[in-house]
Image (cartoon, rainbow over all chains, first blue to last red; front, side, top):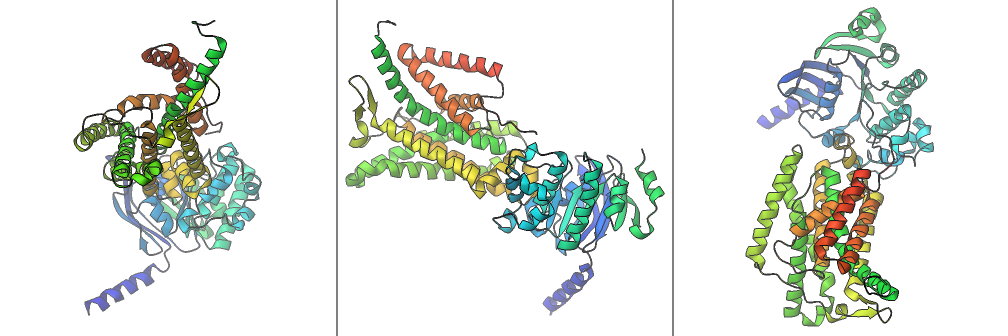
Length: 249
Length: 308
């Protein structure tokens, strides 16, 4: 009897979360004694691209790092496609379907481009780099025997994205992908990200400071300030001036 | 003529001491490989590395005893079994150690230094209790004892050639593991950026344990080679740990080629100088030259050229 009730309640939970690919509730993160995120709530629907905007030091990177498990969570919950991942080590979050493109890209500089992408394959037990990654980023195919550290900034960014996609994620996290990249490449990056979403059905969460880029790709824009989400707009009725004010120093 | 030797004498001396140095080279290289892998992967300086080597030496000794007692017919082959045993036992001990102690200290590098030093003391006492405080020597099967004569004045010990061959095979194996296998790819990713390796889905904990085990296992094989140039005692490992640090620092901690070149040059210089000078003077000269070279080239002999 009690078992059926529990099964039922799990059922309703699952249907509730059916329209949430990534669900973050009351997330608090600290560095030592000082709390950086004061209870962040947000929900990403499947296939959505959400941009988190905010100035330096407002908690964007901390949020990203706590989602992938590089920074421990003090309290709150993170659920990916209905699965609780709050306290899992990074590699298990990746196995659950999360992928991360960090600020500064952090490619493995002494390894070749191909080896860099291959590091993302282990979690699913693959052996060879899927051809569609090279279709998305043709420059990586040309450069595949070069060391990752010898690529240009824009190429490294593509490499970091390809490496993340090699893990076949459900949700892709990008932390300031436009940092240190020339404007023409930024436009191309936006196109590529939208294409990835459309072709692979990915959900994307991107932390950004460049408003034009965020408005270019995002379905929804959130603003984070002092460790809290203070503003939310869908792209249809985005208040550009208001967001720009949040971003000005 | 130099110091009363004729040139042909000098030539023979150089060749023979060179070959004598090759066993030392093998021990250094294997020790340094293990130490460098562990240091490179997890930033742990394993002060107990010498004790893992001696564990391998004791395993070789035990194998020789067991074979001569129970399987004297197969005694001539025992050394190959001993190599395998002296890889597996220290390897497993290393993995157990990583699991029970080291993994809790990754964020405190200075503490790993102290902790592994404590382990080295504990292991020394354990050897004293288990194997006895007396030095033990290993009996070699007859076919490994002799030497071949290259010319009238040059003779080369057979066991030296065997140890050299074994070292080359293991070094090549480590190279293939690191640079051609999937496991090696994971190790290198963790070496370069632990947090990021986790974030692309690599199980860093398992990679750490395997790497620590491999490093300790290779040290054990170095111990098997060591039985041919020294006698095994509980504290013999300590004498080698400093030299091994020297080899790793001199070669450049990230480079396999550097480790090989530095093990070779240090052991050869020492072996050849030892013939003309006393052992400790040879040691002093080697140390001095390494210090001077490291002052001119602090990054070690070989460095990867790559943007970071």
